[in-house]
Length: 181
Length: 302
Image (cartoon, rainbow over all chains, first blue to last red; front, side, top):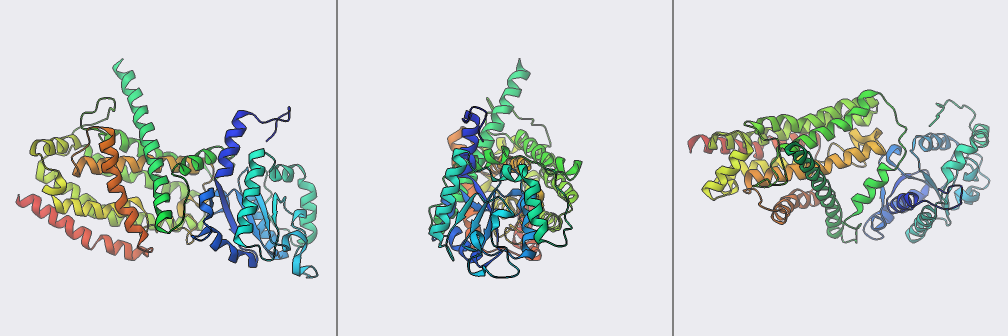
């Protein structure tokens, strides 16, 4: 978080330091990428040594991990989960499908570019990205948090109309509670 | 002036309990990691988590009781802490001892979870409701051997105050761990349920119940719950040390004894998968209650 002078206060430094060393992940298993999460979290690659651990519910989570392709039906639930999370929150797009559709580029019921519907902070490339790549993505996110540049949630709030228009364009029956944070 | 020193001492007690409890939680995570052959988080990871949680924005609102639930937990923890004598000769650490505080303690230790049950009931989350029913069932399970062990001590030594029991240990020169072994065994077995580590983590059941009663509590709520849990851990371990291990004269001895006790539920949990609710209750009403009964018989005969 930057102030007017384009610099961070000492409080922000401390807060960002704790935020980047304590990342609670809501691994929303939307697609095939969810299978890469258990090896990342368990003994072999042990992401807990970086302070990354799973969160049980959206209320407790910091990072929403979109693992792979996102169907239109799932997108609605993902948006609802994202809006239930508490600030500061981050989104990691996981796998090629979230970047440009990947192998589902011509599918009729998956979304192609995740960034049009949710503010993505870090993309992890690959189909599928191996656990090393996942941890690399998390380290990238940690770096961005430490620099105060992971401001996707702020961007989402500021451009809510644009995101809502995109979301409503693709979800025909929009019956969702309106959140006002 | 005395009042001022007492208040200051209470704050110091709370801070010590917070720091020790948090560090024990971190060491628990570290030991778990080493047993699972991985590096694990640093031992101060819980402090980082707590600070992060307290700096998160919290815009969850489910009503008054939901706000008060974590506060009830905190009140219960702090009252337990202030009633349990930290050292044999108190010095800096005052406490609110009175005759019969052991009976009061049995009540106040269940007060926090009951308040939390009300709080999470108001969130309307089905996971929270299931977690609450499981938690209360488990409490009915482990309270029986725990209360039996305490009653055995009360009968045997004709006192209902913790300081009286500590004096009895100082006079006879043996710890109750050796002079009332059945009560000690029953209390240790009840401790498994009290700490809610695996295999008795049926309340917060990760991956099954989505953290149970805490499932709607994020950010600052979780910070309060986490700190109250840490304080409660310290208070419970100190109580066990006071009752069965003869108390501690200074901080290093206290840390040694409490950590030795703390290792029991941790290490047992690592080798045992989670029980179902009815299995857990049946476990507590089996051997632990049997040893509690033996302790009472021993207390009455001796």
